[in-house]
Length: 352
Ligand code: NAD
Ligand code: DAU
Image (cartoon, rainbow, N blue to C red; front, side, top):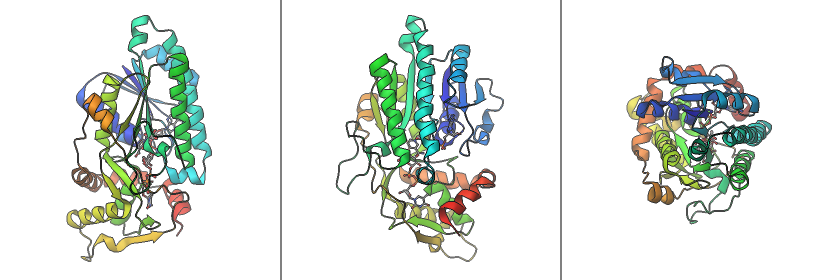
C-alpha cells in the first residue's frame, strides 16, 4: 500500500487513476479538498476497494501518524500543495502554511513512523516529494535548460514556498536518513486541470465566448509535459530512484504562451468551430503582466532518461489534442468546477 497526499487535485488524481490502470496495490489518498481538490476527479474509483479517500490536512501530524500506523504504507507520495502562482501573489499565506509548514508536519509524522519500522520495511520505505522547475528561477533566451545541479532562485511566493519544502525534504535525508526522493517537473497539462491555469482557462473561455487573457507580450516560455507522462516518471523514480536524489522531469517541449494559445484555438476551430465561422484567435486579449513573471523555464531531463530509462509517451501535438478533446467531452466537469468560488477568483484576477 502507498499513501498519496493531494490526490484529489490535478496531477495527484491523474496519478491515482494511472496507478490503478497498471496495478491494484492499494492507495490511501489524503486530501484537504481545497478549492483545487475535487472528488469528481476520482469518481471512477468509487467502487474500487483498493482506493480509500481520507479528507484531511498534511499539516495534521496526528492524523497522518494515525493513517501510517493503521495502514502501514511502503511509501508516501506528496502532491499536496497550493499550486497557483497568481493566487500566491494575491495571498501568500496559504502557500506558506501548506507548502512549508504542512510539509514539515508531514515529514515529522513520517519520520516517527519510519523510525519504528522493522529493519527490512525501514530499508524499503520511500518518501517521494513532488516539486516544480519554478524553484530554479527564470532562464534567459539562450541559457541551457535546468539541471538538477542548478542553484535555487525562486521568484514568486509559490516557488519560494516549494523551494523551502524541497530544502526540508533534503535536510530530513541528510540529518535523519529519511529515504526521500524529490522530483522537479515542468508545466503539466491534461485532463482534470483546474481552469485557473493557462491551458484549461483558455479552452473554457474560448468555448464560453470570453477573452483569452495573455499576460504581457505572451512571449514567456514554458516547457509542457502531458500529465500522464509526469505520472509515469513519478512511478519510475519511486521504483528505481537513488535515495536522497533529485530528478528533473520534462518533455523537451518549450513553447511561448502565445503559440500555445494559438494552437488551442486552431484545434478548437477544427473540433468545435464557432457559430459565426470566425477563429477563436479573435478572442485573444493582451492584459497586464503577472508581477515578477518568470520569462522562461526549460527542463533538462537527461538524468531521468539515462539512469532510469524514462521517456514521455506524448509529444506536445498529441497531448494537446487529447486535452482539448477531453475538455470538449467533459463540459459538465468544467461547469461544476467553474461555479461558485471560481467566479470570485476570476473577478479578482481579471476584473470585468
Ligand atoms: P492542484 O492545485 O491541482 O492540487 C493540489 C491538491 O492538494 C488539491 O487536491 C488540494 O485539495 C490538496 N491540498 C492542498 N493543501 C492541502 C493540505 N494542506 N493537505 C492536504 N491536501 C491539500 O495542484 P497540481 O497541479 O495537481 O500539483 C500537484 C503537485 O505538483 C504540487 O506539489 C505542485 O507544486 C507540483 N507541480 C505541479 C505542476 C503543474 O504544472 N501543475 C508542475 C510541477 C509540479
Ligand atoms: O513550471 C511548473 C509550474 O507550472 C507548476 O509548479 C505550477 O503549479 C503550475 O501552476 C505552473 O505554473 P505557471 O505559472 O507556469 O502556470 P500558469 O498556467 O498559471 O501559467 C502559464 C503561463 O501562462 C505563465 O507564463 C503565465 C501565463 N498566463 C497564465 C494565465 C493563468 C497568461 O498569459 N494568462 C493567464 O490568464
